Amino acid sequence: MENKIALILGGQTGLLGQAITDILNKNKWEAISPAKNKFNIFSSEELKNFIQKHHISYVFNTIAYTQVDKAEQEQKKAIELNRTFPVILGNVCKELGIYLIHYSTDFVFNGQKESPYEPTDPPCPLNIYGKTKLEGEKNLLEITNLKLLIIRTAWLFGQGKVNFVSKILNLAKEKQTLNVVHDQVGSPTYTYDLAKYSLQLVNTNATGIFHIVNSGQASWCELAQEAVHCLGLQCKIIPISSHEFPQTAKRPTYSVLSTKKFTEQTGITPRPWVQALREYLYSFHF
Ligand SMILES: NC(=O)c1ccc[n+]([C@@H]2O[C@H](COP(=O)([O-])OP(=O)(O)OC[C@H]3O[C@@H](n4cnc5c(N)ncnc54)[C@H](OP(=O)(O)O)[C@@H]3O)[C@@H](O)[C@H]2O)c1
Image (cartoon, rainbow, N blue to C red):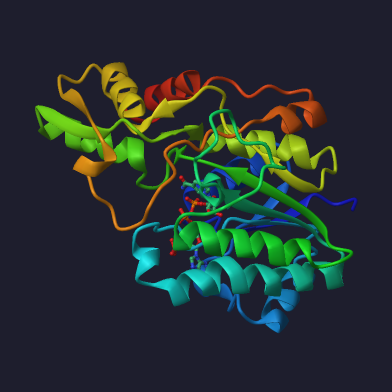
């Protein structure tokens, strides 16, 4: 794999895909991020033709059905994107000898653990999104002779697309108080950090399942509070319980991911989420 030509699926409009595209370009890779209508992702032939035509050696797959609540009603769509598509892609990558980097989620876990989840911990998703993402992982891992890296991540924020932090800030500019859930704890992660760390991991030729998130942990309420405070907004953030904010999909109360395996592989310890959040806010929200 001499050339550094990568296909970033979801790279034009996706929250993470845009960050990966930028980071690869900055590192002198050739990043190809086609528009959604460029080819039909469910057609092996069209995928193969595109990959061969552009001499691609790496595929970063950020395409997913990511609307956690809507997935409960739109199960078929979630299955198509999160379970069916990865298999089609995986088989194409196997046939062409392509290194596939596929993203997954902390929502494969049920939140019953009290210390950060390792890649070896048994998954047990609570909702359709998590179930279909887990099935996508499992089906990919069953493809023999595929050079496959699965990166589970969590609670993304970053430029280029609406996300939890940007939503909170827009609301906080208009409202005096905001109620935010405080009994779900996870690993807030900056898309640009995740993209950088992913590239560093890929450069070690890693395969298998890894977790990549910024270090530390927070509740949604703590994340919101930090963002509002950082921008000096006057809005008061009020902690509430999940029962006071019912959502269609059940979510884990604790889904902090351990990056120990990532650090062992790369020698890198991800920076704290608060520091990453400040960089995002100072760069894009002032
Ligand atoms: N966001 C998070 O907090 C989070 C947390 C944990 C794990 N993850 C994982 O990280 C990965 C990236 O997530 P993300 O938040 O960046 O996702 P996202 O912003 O929803 O991006 C998904 C991308 O897939 C594209 N896409 C959807 N259907 C498609 C189709 N039929 N053909 C071609 N493209 C299609 C979307 O295009 P359009 O915009 O045009 O629809 C979009 O560019 C996913 O695997 C997700 O499960 C995300």
